[in-house]
Image 1 (cartoon, rainbow, N blue to C red):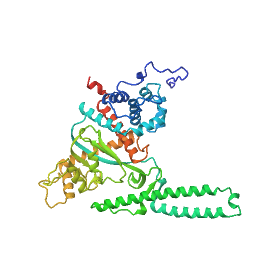
Image 2: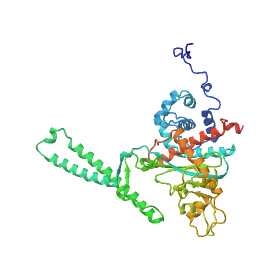
Image 3: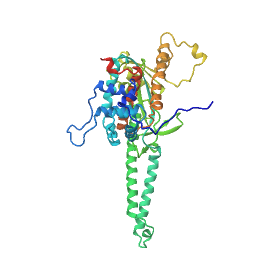
Image 4: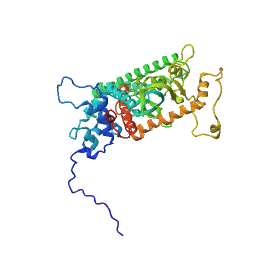
Length: 448
């Protein structure tokens, strides 16, 4: 019996359907995003209200274009522009015939942080209204390194910058002596001495500026160190680094901690009550999470969630951070959410002893330190249940953002712009997650 194959006919003209929506199922993500953005009614767009110049693209269309692109792993402005010609969903978003230039896409993304933040909050409030997000509940907090749009090979340490400056001074001096020679040797080699001197002076100026910035960083770290207790030993000034591509980014441990990358530290606060929606977050230059517990909790809008418990891993723990979040008053009573934060790294899997251990019982001994009290609390049945939710919520969220959506490197540079892009990433993730929670049902149908 001979093998039979389906016939592939590329000679017959392939026409678009009369309506492109025929190629997009009713429960397609693009319909959900378009409908949701119409429902929330974003208002803070930066537009040319004078009406001068060329016609502007509708800002709602541009927001939809960026959100859907980020959900589906298209992050570069040129990549998005090209996809408006080839991707059916993006063509549908742009009305079939519009193809925003990459510079327009990039400018819209860079200039509309307030819009992304407004969209982030409003979509969460809408999730509350349709019963997919509880008003009161717990959150889990975590941080993850994401590559900056810069190479670590474009960085220089304070010590190395000083060495290069001295070398450049010597080269400039040598070039000036060469220019004074009367035998014309420089002209014979085709050497443009004024240009070479300028290049070295410009580089020297840039390195001197970088050293000033590193000195400011060192001084700020010194002041912080003296203001706090229990911080690690401060690194030497000679070890500070400056990146010439993105000076706000930092060299940070990546992966399993055995190598370093030019990165930012992204923070996410995730719902632990079933939705796995991101409720807050931001980007920091701090290489570790020691100072991020309180800022992370404060990044959650009170309209979105009344937080009653916070879970975090050992990287967030400090006695001061826990007290700041729990808001212990003078009488020793807690006025803020209860914190469940690991105080030491645990092992993977459970031993027989772990399974048999039912946790501490009775009153907490009064002679325990705050750290010991936290460790004891995490050993209780309640503590184990709450901390388990952290592993089941915030950790998978970063996995989805990096592996499913494919976002592993920022496209923008500078801490302010990177925070803008992280807002967009969080918005895109929440649209993707809410679409799944709604099983494809459009939000407008819930209010019909």
